[in-house]
Length: 241
Image (cartoon, rainbow, N blue to C red; front, top):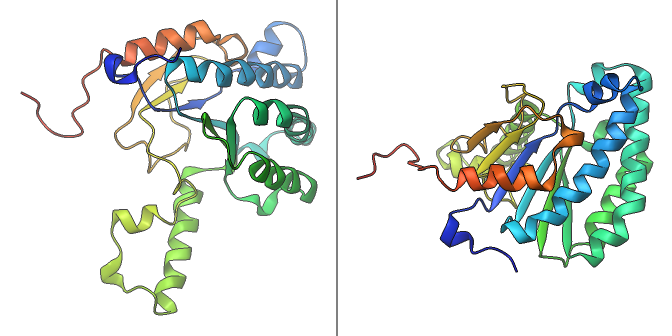
């Protein structure tokens, strides 16, 4: 049975920067793409663990706007992996009640991948057990820039004025307009930086930086991190008595 999130104060929305696939592969004398495939299998395990942990929303950082700087071989391999993941996991995600949505700029992605993304979103649109959001060609600054551009169009066309613009209004133009803000952001692999991920949305999120490389980040370790979150006192800028 799912845990009582009110009782243990567990996070409803967890975001994960899945780091360390390449290093994991290198440690084993294998190409970096071997690590990315292992990381994709780990996603399946963590998604399946969410209901028992009381996690309703899971957002994962799959490919950043900066990742295009990697070698052509690695980028091509990652794009093929994303296509394969969607094709292979679609039925399981549907059957397990997972709703999948993607955030990020799709303009630079190939038509085949975008079509698969669109179809998976439509296929799982009635699911509500877990909301899995995949950040693909995503960057926090890029997202805010695109939101500001859309907001500017609304002002230019007279549907809004500058006086209508506040934090709540801008949030409605972000890729994540359908999501609550994350309660907890986890980064694997021992790196202690946020790497342009959910910059706006994570203003009051708790952060957990773990040393484990992503392909080794098990459901048991996920559970341990979530339990640690339950002991934190979140003030949101206020002083609690």
